[in-house]
Image 1 (spheres, chains in turn cyan, brown):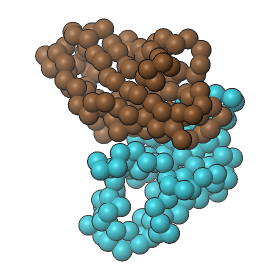
Image 2 (spheres, rainbow over the protein chains, first blue to last red):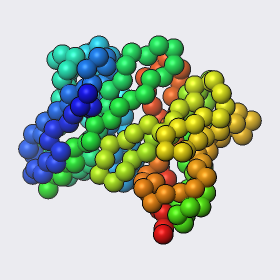
Image 3 (cartoon, rainbow over the protein chains, first blue to last red):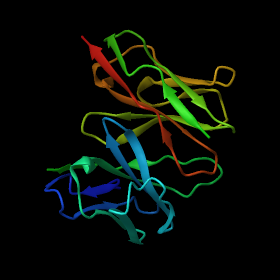
Length: 116
Length: 113
């Protein structure tokens, strides 16, 4: 398996532009997670999905952020409009269905976003 | 609520010497605990996990961690550091049957020749 795939790996954009980050989870995994990593705040969970349904979006910073999972093999995280404080590395992770104990989350390589 | 505290933001060791990365957790329930490693410009990889079975957990690359309920600790150790161990290490807590992971702030491990 190719693992979790994220695109693009690097994105540089100007303030006010729309940014779309993409993620393809591992086949057969039914949970998908979006994280943001910054020096100041460390790793933060933004939102996660089970079976394509958003379960907890309490970590989404504000209305400028939105995430979708139209099918089991694809998810997007969109920022509109983007701001310089959104600059961070965004990770996508996926896992198997929870079966009483927590299952390992498999992380993608991340998208490094720079908003000028 | 559950949380995790990594007691050292940076640890520096010489190659061939032992590694100790400290982690304390807080949880109202029996937690699941994990250590993840992040190499520069890479995603995170699971090193090991504790899920209420054996208290001494062995992971990949010679790492192990011991769950001590009385001390609410889950320290990561390795007998002999290798240059390739230089990375950032995250202690993580989760409740059983809960998909959410709570990450510590991370410990950056440097290994010197």
